[in-house]
Length: 555
Image 1 (tube, one colour):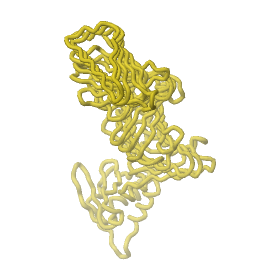
Image 2 (cartoon, rainbow, N blue to C red):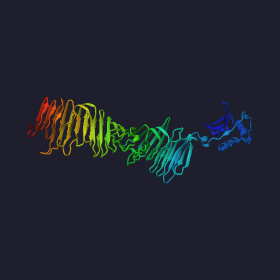
Image 3 (cartoon, rainbow, N blue to C red):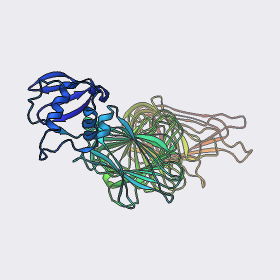
Image 4 (cartoon, helix red, strand yellow):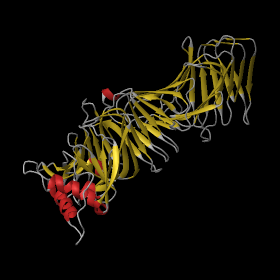
């Protein structure tokens, strides 16, 4: 319903065309429906017969209304009106377009600069208008009463455009903005304001949406053909979500390598993600990769961001790639843990950077369906950090690769040099590679080490707590080169206490040498050649030399 305001009462008109038939007068809390002649008499007395000091209707609308009401049909007599004695009747002008339409309308702006436009969207809280400025010339391009605007559309040019939304003034209603950058490398910037949460979701390479929630208000910004978002607003929480379902590389680091409380999320050299540069949130940053085989690449992280980041891999086979610095990794749950001040969940692979020292600490509950990889070169290691298990099995599949199975849970590793196991285990089983192994078992006091002493190591060394029940060493296969190929195991002075020792040569030619005092609950050795040059203290000793050729036991 459109409205015309009076000083001492208000007149409501359903549509302006009806003003010739009737009007509604509110006075003293009562509503009076007047005929056109009655309203005309009241209007004429106030505005036609008034003195010059009491100015009539100001503005275009007032003049139109006066002339419309003064039009009379020929021959129609003027009748006295009940409102003839109304004092202090004054008509106040209202904004014409708002009166003529009760419907909110879109606020559409086309950028206009062949060299690339730089516009800003601002809010004037004093007069409650939404304004578009050209930042290059500091010129007001257009403005609308905020109550008239349903949503705002800004369309860019074919060049590199930038739209800045200034949240410095407190909006009384939620914004709905749609920015279509067009061709070129376009940017959406956000400044001022403070939010509980800001969420940027990307669905294709350069499209997505932003929601910014502050109390009961949630502002929405749609993005199309936008390559970057620069967010300098203050926020408690930030969320970056890839909803495309495609495989993405998401790079996380400082905006320029300095400690400036600014960080960046992007796709590196590709443009299949909207780049997000943002002020470090007060509480948390969540990066949700969604579906697809995604990779999180950690670069230099701003210290202000440490401890606030959560990476969520979602569906697919996802990886976290570590920073270039020497790094400690912590796998604490099923595909979850933390590295370099960044937490991660639902990821399948952990990959260290090249040419550094990565150490992977695997807790008792640590699980990973993919692989822990140290990266090229460098010196990388794994530490099985605590826990109690009935059985742990180690299988070498290459020089720096293999599997570790803890009570049926398998961990895959690659590119790791030493393995250290601090867990408490009843039965340990170690299987060396299928190359020509030269293995040595050493006693370090509370721990044992099985290492490859070849000029070119064939498996990673393993240092572990002594088992409580048994230790089994399987020598696996060899390369199968006639005469030359064989596996060898040298057992130095070792004290297993009451735990048993089992050695199985398995395929190929195998030689086992006991060169130091061996103490165990029982000793059982199966190989083609067995040499004993020291004392064996055991409840039982079984040495079995068996082969297609002549077996040999040397004492």
